[in-house]
Image (cartoon, rainbow, N blue to C red; front, side):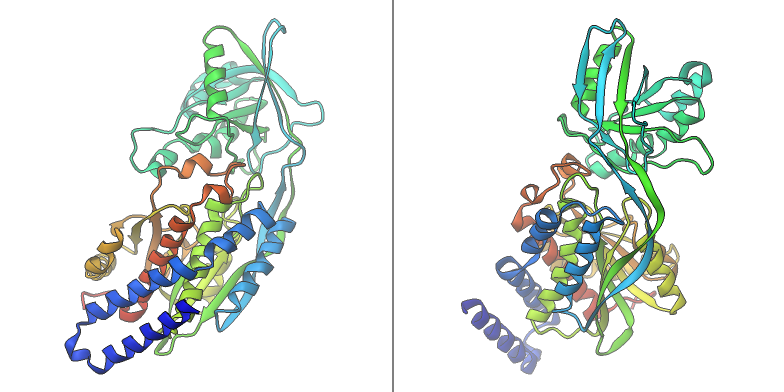
Length: 471
């Protein structure tokens, strides 16, 4: 009741400002509205409750799974309360299933020592067969080492990729980018030289016992071999043992690709713009997550950030000038089926996304936004964004040049602005693609601050627009 009264008083104050606008600058009015966004979300925002439901009641939402279908219906129903329309957009996705719990054992060559370690099959991996596989381990740091060893050094063995993420990188996404090739492409390269399986060090700077799954890709028409990730602690143990003597690995999985094409859906909600309805501002994250946790940070947080934008603007009685869309994409993790389907339909309809903001970096404390556009128009866009620095500084939000997000990247050809929401990244890869990516890993205040940052940027983009020049 109190917050409702406060909101009414605030709206009355805004109307008063409008009547004596000559006494207040536009910057003052913008600052007040951005403050109201933060106040509304921090006191009444629903994003944490929505995330709790996605992570704990529905759980892991791998594309094509029953859980993903439940999440689609749930988020559509929530968004329908705050949008002019909420609907489902068909897309084709692969459906891979993990199957039974993985078994990984380290064995010495004499057969008198066996150590059980944890492991997670990589997404899209084939299984080992009912008996599992066992072979001598060959440790490498890079894909080029596999190529250098060739068939003579690799054939019939299990390749162990053990290149850590670089701990000296301040932005951990750069460290991830410098190491993830061994997970994505390593199994396919090892298979070319006759390996019968692969073990991959988990993608994290943490030393812990949590294996991290994630996608792997085979070459079309090439050999396919089982691939498992092990924790960083187990990777260090295996490395130490290999320094002393040859070691075998036994691994068992029965994961499989059920079908490479299954009907699924993006969830889309829209509020029609009052003045420039053909100019679209998109906010979004990806609905799907890996199956082993709750997908709280990756990317339930991005979904509820985007949903919160709509709830907040409705609660503040804000009528956008431009058309706002919330898009929850399906199949970012192992195929990008949703992002491609959205971009193809948008292009066919001749749409222009003036701006698109993707949140896919977790629910941690917001640090700002990275910005991208076609080279010929980016400088003009960026100069306009920098005019808002004084409005963003009180919330410690910066603007940098850089990438945006996998699902919105196909929209770059439309000639609009692409932005990636950037929270603090230091702890993200402690949880990324693991069984511990659950609601307990997300701080409610940090999550809400991220939603407030997103909503504030949408407000500025909508209120002022952006042009390809320097106006």
